[in-house]
Length: 500
Ligand SMILES: Nc1nc2c(ncn2[C@@H]2O[C@H](COP(=O)(O)OP(=O)(O)OP(=O)(O)O)[C@@H](O)[C@H]2O)c(=O)[nH]1
Image (cartoon, rainbow, N blue to C red; front, side, top):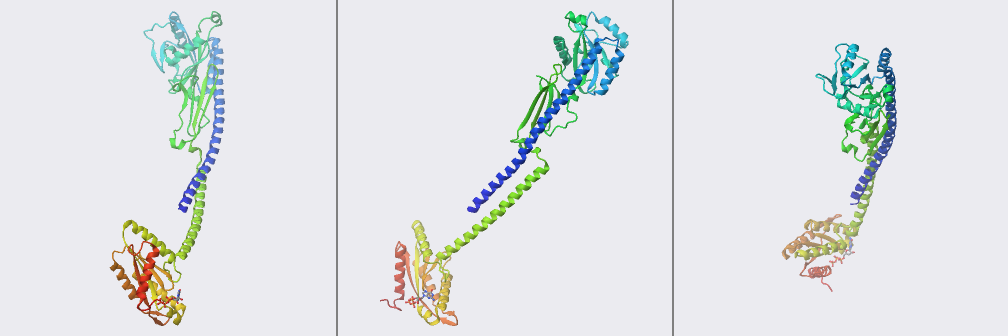
């Protein structure tokens, strides 16, 4: 029982200590993950802010060219080429004009003169172009009238009416309403990747003074994916999204979903979240980072250190447990030995009076419940004293041991054989069916004990007197039973040795 408790306590201790070791490593890993998360948030915000500032600068510079009209087209081309080479996010710089139905024929003629006879007015919808023929009756058209750098790939976009595209129309209306630069939601570019547009309205100063709606726009067509952190590899499981302030996640310019981990590997770990509002009024962006921490924070080395420490601890506890169990069994052996000494006769190894009384008491209580009988046999050797006197006490001892062995050989293993002292023995036979059964045992005992003993070169012969008492006929108490058995034993001795 004690060893079971100690094993349980050791298992618990091992579990708690192993958990504490793992916790120590984990809390260190979580702390450094939190620091890394904050640093990453700051670094990404700075990178993004720089990219947005570049956009603002390009757009402002291009707007300045646009203000000058078409006189400086050569410089505008050089500027656009340089910007596109230096900033890969820049797809093109475009100029858009608001044309009413009445202005359309004249404007169309100007455009044909400028770009050639294949110039057409198109509807630009979700990256595809459809000719506006026959011309639908819109109050205003917003065609692209210039694209820089003008590559073969983007040339078909000349004359594309951007007001027909839902994403661009939204940005256009906002720009018209506010008179300020606006940023469109991301959409699919004809080049095959996602992009968005920065749209800046402007007016001739004369029109501005009249408070008229802007008639011209400069637009920066940008690749949306350049907003993603290029030089930074995100840690495992981290999610990143960049979207316009107040917009739904579906309208994100960048959305990195991060690796998904099972609930078990993240159970009990904190989730780190960060949201930063970035950019200008023209490019109001929200950067969101989301990182569910888990066991993956620990490196293979750290995991093996935890494992080894836990194993070492287990070994120590097992050694301690074995030592303790050794101590316990030694103590148990000592106790058993003491118990044996207290309950057995040293010379013969038979039960002593103490143990016999215990067994008899126990047997009586048992018989009270099942209604069976038992027999107590009292044995006293005849003519034993002369053995001592003639051959010595040591020879007498050996004879007593042989007597004990002979009695044991006859009795059943469940019977109790005890030596009360001197040459007196008592036997307890449990579950006796009949007197005849006990009488038969008595006869066999007599016969066996009376056989000669060959000890120290002497042939010694003894007699034995035996008295039997039955429970419950002869008494219900131990003393009564022993008294009856003792008296009957003397009765058995009587003819040979009359008592006074
Ligand atoms: N060798 C030896 N003798 C013992 C031991 N204990 C008691 N005795 C002796 O055993 C004898 C028992 O006495 P009795 O029962 O009167 O001897 P007995 O000759 O058998 O007499 P009856 O029973 O009347 O026949 C005594 O001489 C004791 O000294 C013992 O442990 N070893």
